[in-house]
Image 1: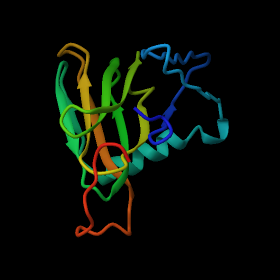
Image 2 (image 1 turned 45 degrees about the horizontal axis):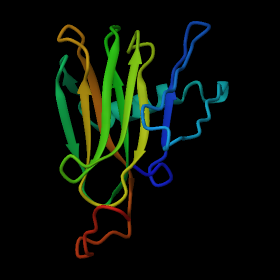
Image 3 (image 1 turned 180 degrees about the vertical axis):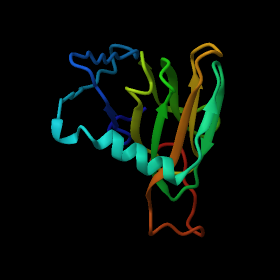
Image 4 (image 1 turned 120 degrees about the vertical axis):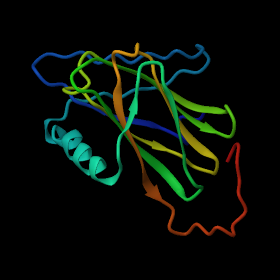
Amino acid sequence: EDGKLRPYNGVQATPMGMNTVGVHNTGNAEFPYSTLIEADPAKANLIDFASNEIEHLAEPVLLQGGAIKSFPFPPDVESVAVLMKTDGMNLKCHMEILQGPNNNKQAVEYYASDGYKRPFFTVMNTPGSGNTIRITNQNTVEFPFHAWVVPYGINKNYSRYDPVEGGLL
């Protein structure tokens, strides 16, 4: 809904030589966006580091093919880290940030031919209250994947006595 309020940042592993990363805007032509994709060998181990950190913070959730799982977060969570990977099979998922019932703020679709060698990692901003991350496994039941969804940025100044705001900020 608002790319400045919720910019998308993702890390994609590209092992084994030449790789292609495709980015598509499925929205209307009236809503363009700009993209920066860079190959940064200095950050090559970032996905391994993030993987190890997140795997120790939470238990993974298994999403069988066709499964939908929602992860609600309290208002003091300003961003959420998401890691998804398989045991070597392909990974095809749809991930959304919702604020309120079915109020889609941002959506990302991801496909990798090998979700173990090319896991998906992102940090998504979740400003305001009532935020939920909803993940859908778009594959058939033979292709499950594991998802870790954990709070990343916490507002230390948040008070549970502050008024709760939702919608547009």
